[in-house]
Length: 351
Image (tube, rainbow, N blue to C red; front, side):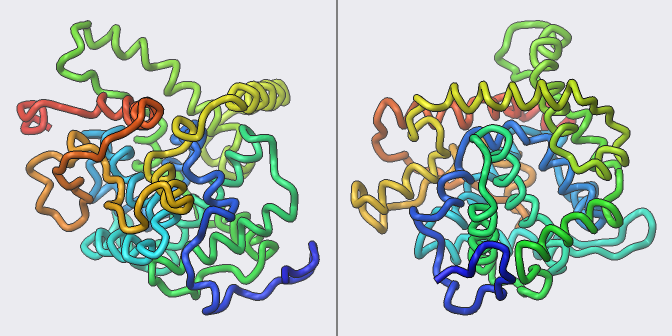
């Protein structure tokens, strides 16, 4: 039985080591394509954490293949929520990618991606991604739903096999944790600036001048920066030097309502990430419970010179199972922009 709204809730115990299922709110929201509208927000706020930003600066190739890198990584990240009995295995897989990401930043501070505080911060941003997407683009959340999502985010985090020491005990504690991090610890570093100024490389097969390509995609990137400015906490917005007016807030709320209404008739096969669609079908008995997990398309693989590095998820090369038309359309929507990250071997060598 759940505690009454407003009452302190104990930290989730070992009895919640089970993976999340289709009755959870996390399943409802995390795989929703609308989370992609906060891409700049989550990339920036993750990188503002000093240790995480240093790791990105020293080890990431995000600028070399921005959308391809993001779209590829989303598959195992989704899996920790949607892989059912295999979720803990997926969590261990993600944890292994971070073992070699360590070093010393420009200020002489040592960092390691598996530092429990650093690893949990990344998870906290995914949790807040759900909260903010639901609040701005999916009709909002009640306080009871926020508390439920908090409990589920603890259950979700257990799938990584990491120390639970940094995890706040209650929803109220988490709000204090988030506020403190935003006010006192986040900083604007080079990794954050790279997210704010990110551009989408032109695929080699697109026959148009690069300046024209940049002009076509600039509105999309500018819109994401504007949304990020709106959903940032005021302390973070101030650090980033971003301007936000009451008129901007009204416009964002109206835009969010329009998005919510537009998605009423969108089928789940299009609205949800392919890994989430497969999870619902397993839960409904439409496909075998042990069916192979949905992996990223092979064209999203890291550049050839990086594929042997333990920090990279490399999609397996295999023939995908038959898909319905809706499945194919949904998969296309979730992956099409990552084509902009595909680069020729010559471009890879130059980079």
